[in-house]
Image 1 (cartoon, one colour):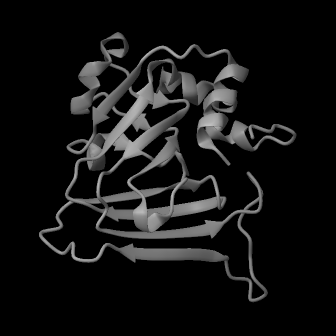
Image 2: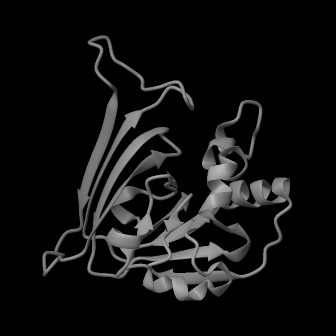
Image 3: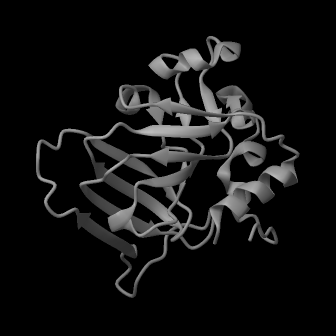
Length: 194
C-alpha cells in the first residue's frame, strides 16, 4: 500500500487543505513531552534499511521545546490527526515486536495454546558500533501488520517529525471526537484508501 496515496485520499475525504509542512526536531523532547502511545505506525521500507516511517496520532505536550512553533495553541497540548513522517536518520540497531490484533476493538489473535501471536524482528547495521547513545522506544499500534507494536531504534542522529499544519489540533478536540480525529477511521469497515 502506498502511504502517500492513503494520506492524500484520507485528506481529501475529510476536506483538508494541504497548507504548510513543518519539520520539528523532537530529540530533546522525545522521552518527556512527545507521546506516541495513541499513535498508529506505518512502515513502508525494509527494516534493515529504514530511516523513516509514518505515524498517525502523535501528541505534543505544551512543555516541549518544539512547542514554540505553535503559538496559536498556546497553553494546550497538541494531537497530530494525520500521518506525520518520523525521520531517525541512520539506524544502527532496531527491534520490532507486534502482538497481532484480529480487527479494531476485537482483541488479540491467539494460537492453539491460547498464547497471543507475536511476530518480531531485529536488525543491526554492520560496522556501526561507535558510541551509540540515543535510543528511541515506541509503544503503540502498527498499521500493518495490525497489532500492538513495540519498536526500539538506536541511532546517533536526531529524530524529527514532518507534519502538515492542517493536521494539528488540540488534544481536547481529539478526546471529544476520537472517531473523527483518531487513526481508527482507517480501519472502518467498507472504507478503502488504496
